[in-house]
Image (cartoon, rainbow, N blue to C red; front, side, top):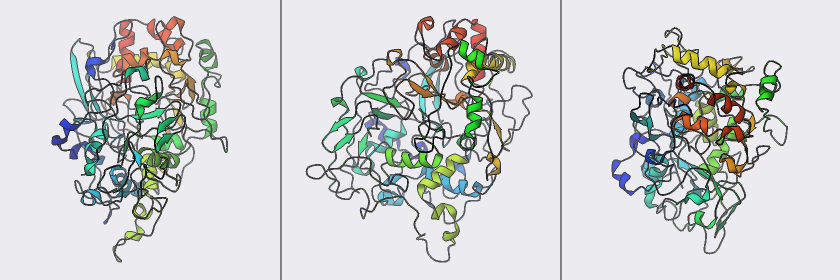
Length: 586
């Protein structure tokens, strides 16, 4: 079955899914700030497709039986009138030598992996799924609000007018695609692992709950396991295995035994969006160092007064700044793509050529070693196999590995644009048709967004921008759309101390310089369209996400965000509401 996209998921499967997700709206905790300001909910992705001419060659690397050789997935999904488009996200960044390949690589990002590349009547063409995996395609976890984003889901939010509204993201989303894809694909017998709340008492209770929440990754804090499925300390414990699949005869590898790990033993993470990452990758290290609030003479005093410092995670080999992932643990988008291929899908590649999952001989075996020949790596640069005369050998996407395709897709993905609260007529800098207007707030269209933006950027009133820095400038790049560009990620890409595990945000995982209590400042561009927040998705609205930055009472907190949260809590209800409305404009 082709299960990588919510559009192609049969409704007949829904009743068999017992999904691994966050608590539903019925189990959500408080949605308002201390003064009663509430989240207005996400603005919709758009009301019209982008006017894009798609230079997709023939043949493409993985012909898509649902939407062959067109740009249907590059268009913004329909909006509920009168909400206008959030220009940029899911579109191409400028031009340059990789622009044409980007249109081809989206096909790879959406492609589905199977064990031998032959499942589902060739609709699951990537070779090497498993032996253990979280999902079978990139898009199943990165599909909202458009392809390349974060996880979709369904939440209900109490809005500023007191009414409850249910938001579904993306609009075709019906239930968790990560788990739907695994429910019965190729006759597998994988089941939903249960996560009793005592595993993570300071976080959300991951019990057997309805299938509305986001895709999840699970890390084992202390390592361990049983049989042939053992993970090291801090490593990802994949949710599923290829045991019993029709394309993996003879494989005997039971699902990971999460229940055998004990209390406080696992940590959850949701997918990070891939929009705008090429600009982040192209930003010089020294720019990030100079931009850090504590290093900038204009902001150092305010940062110190609020207890904000920050540092950078760095590559252990050359000492350069790493910047991708929840703990900024990955150096480059190519490494990011290669690691995700191996960890999330179990597909080895030229960057990660060895299977992650321990497979032993004896009672626990996978004779095929998850590829038809057992050759490793499963994803690598190989001569094109298309018939002579097709021109396939000249198509960059075809001769490149899947990992390289995915890195190009992320590198050239445009960031979301803020709605234009000033003129309502501005065309965003990446060439998509404007205007990128604001949604209809309860007050005037313009005033709450501009007032909230001013408060957010005021270091003496909130200090938010000391970590969520609005503006950076990329360095020189061979791709014109990435070269010397001013962009607005609302992040310093540094790691900050979020306090001890008793506060609820520390996760017990160390990755490089980012120990248990450290997390990268999450970029806020596109947050206006998100419905899950913080590293494990525990917050379903922005008011809760802000409150969870510091334990209650904030006056007792010592982590780096508590000073800013104390200032925020001291604002009036109207001021807090303006900040929430501003965030929803991003």
